[in-house]
Length: 174
Image (cartoon, rainbow, N blue to C red; front, side, top):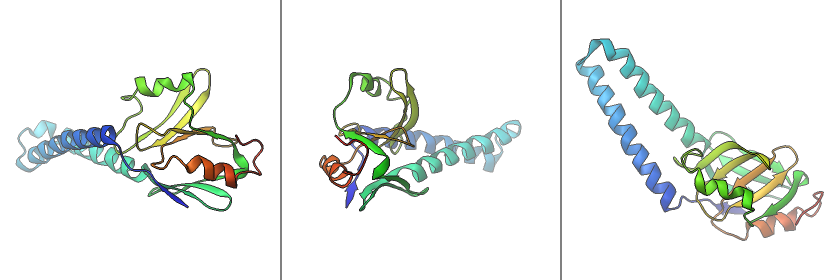
């Protein structure tokens, strides 16, 4: 079963804003390259334009397209390759937001938000948390054996029920 993960207003607004700023930077640098306005800064223009394009491409390829639940696997579908998590590795899946996770609401800049909210961050009381969220709601916290804690944000809040239903063979499923 596939679960969509569309962008919310915050993510969409930030993506449009950053895309606009990046476009202005790239166009300005291309104009500088074409007309050689400042020859001494020509290599800087190449570097800046290339850097912005590469970062944008990486973000696009790493963005979750959808979350898919098969018979025994949770898949995070991405252009850069799927992330497969067998249900045997899933310890728990929960929508409750523990107090420690309120850091997400305070550090939106740190965890990006261009195309998706994605990062690998360290929380002192919890450890490493990997974000694969496209919106700033419906956070589904999945604790796994090999991948640590993963945060997803499906559009459909019933995704947890399917993980628990299919993951009954996991060590402990809430």
